[in-house]
Image (tube, rainbow, N blue to C red; front, side, top):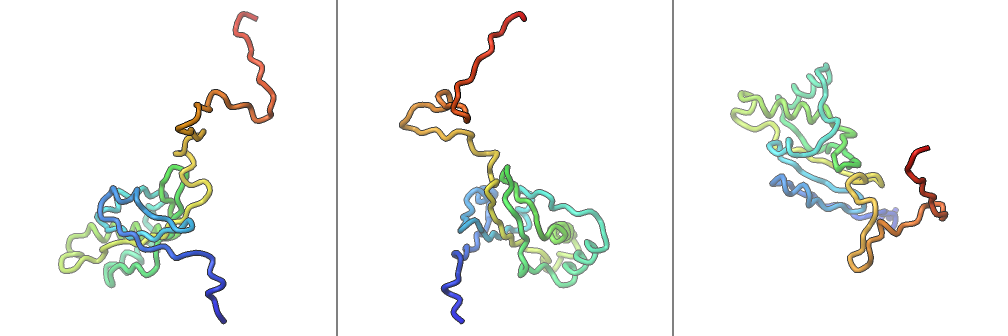
Length: 164
């Protein structure tokens, strides 16, 4: 069966983050992006809901990373929130465990166990919604903020301020 005719979109290319400024230049393809972030720059990534509390599951992930190293074959899934934060959908335990293991001196003495984390980001209609201006201003037209009509099409009545 030929699946080429069933392809929905293009595949995003891998964006590597080398500086914190590179976070603002991530290219999305059809609302998706694949991003690789070095562990040293993880603190500059605007993650939300990434920290996990101590649990047996977290201990197993930490022990696995200590013994085998971190594998980014299964990326961390995040959506871009209304303020531009990366909201973690899947992979919070891996992020917390990778941070802990990367800060251990003796574990990383001969070889770094965690080099970088791979993220899959997706945008929703609400992504960056609180950062966008409420009214789009055109550079060659008049300022529309003051000339907009109410949604109902009727003029608003102004109340006079004064003594009742």
